[in-house]
Image: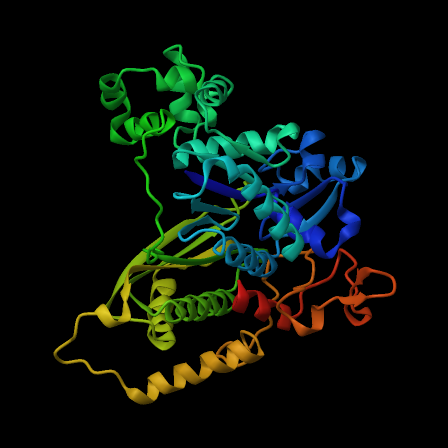
Length: 450
């Protein structure tokens, strides 16, 4: 048997842990640049807020409906996710962290009659130790565990736990699940199946294997077999190496100055190189892109990107800087107002697997310098030490007007707990008003911990 543990409305739940006043109220979390809705509480869903709703288009409606708003705080979410996953890993010999808020557990060998009680124990422990509510779905396969989790979230009688362990429960679950809600099907493929008269998971599971393989390939056949109770997907317990690293931002205001764009790309190069070294990897290629604001049709539009190989593969900030600035010179065009830029590191491999170059040797002094800079930036915040050409202030950073403090990763933001009054109270020096501007240190915290 497999269990899927999914944190309920994870980003919103993280905000509520340290701001209990948000409990029971409609709450949404916005994307990096406060652009669109990326998370909703149940209360916000109930009054019609949709994922992807553009904030500036719906701002007045949100205010009228009394919806509370938070900017995304990935530093907080990442740290809370690590805490939750650490707890879940103690409940089974094998665990697969599927996403920031989902984890599969292998419950093979556990007594079947005690799985529901065990799942409730998981829910209680995670809630007690982190404040995050979770739902648990249990099934013979990962696909059925995913389906059971969906039922656990939507059926109030389940109290956050649902186990598909009988033929009757399996048939009922399949009959009541739309084809588009099956893990691995999706809307586009679901519409094709709807056109064939297949509306539910039960109808899909009854299809002939030959038809499924012909029309949906091996992946579709695996999904059907999993729905019937045949294990095709095992736990992926080994974390896969990244294939690429991207650092990009939409700017708080348009940029029409080359020097400012130069600083932005240099900052991204520094951040990308630091991520490479943190993962003990090197990059063999680099791509840089810039683009104007597609929503400003009254202004000239321009978008371009270019890719360059790096031989030998490297994680040196200096080398990545040089390559990025060369590309920027090639693609920059004056007379445009740029709204977004980014860097993509390609052809990644483990540093120890990098091919040796006959006529190239690493300068040990450069390696020591980079290592020292990483240690300083990790201790005092990103940007504490940087390349000399980065002298202009970061006025281009996209706004995050409603971002909560870094409660768990910044000493300045740790809330005060009063044993007498039994509630959390943020430090008066850093009261969160919902409209706090990010200072330089906060940017550093976000880059370091996120």
